[in-house]
Length: 332
Image (cartoon, rainbow, N blue to C red; front, top):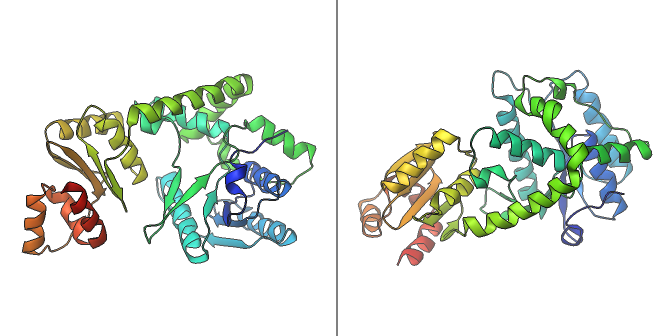
């Protein structure tokens, strides 16, 4: 029997389930029904398969049958970097729905095999602790509000999900592209993660719990955080906390970029990562924020100079007056 995580936190909240009608999200749909958890569904149709529209129609019918609101959006993606583009579109869609309809949490169907796949993918690239151990725990909306992300299947292995669907004769769809091993995730899944989890699921779950507990101790906390700005003490923990902050802003550090960031902090420098995030250090703090451009007033620049705020962070603060006000209080 599958036991969902976070049930006490899910009860009584207005929730949005990211739904694809694949095995994981379909199982989670029915398991949430079993637990009398209230939720609605959102599906992003990438039009990548001949069956995509059929899957969307079936998902809509399922939601109507059980009295769930159903939201869908379509987009055809071309050229390279499909996974990254698809994720950005999908999460923008979810964020917009949460903001417009007041959802208090986003529910995702990631399961234990997904966690282990991510671990192996990042492990193979020389990732730091923050990027090695999993996914974001919250979603920041356009108005600056944060909502929690819940993954009730995070400790459930894939083979138990498939067994649940078979035993209950529940219809779901298979994405044939998941068999294409030219995608890194599919290669790791086919050759490593699924086989390993099938034999060692309980031990992997306990290991992830222990590692995440260690992670909280080793990383420490941000000195200041608000609306996409992160300030951390420039000390021995700085690179790991920078990893965490950059991940929240959509930047995953490779081994090379991690080394570049570490040098910038050591040398009190300023760099731009992935053409979109500024990382700037002075003797005391490291500042991380989305890279922005703006014409700055002379008085504002002087305030920043006195507060020792690096130049590449200033445009972001100029465009976010409330964050700047709070930061001034912190730095003073």
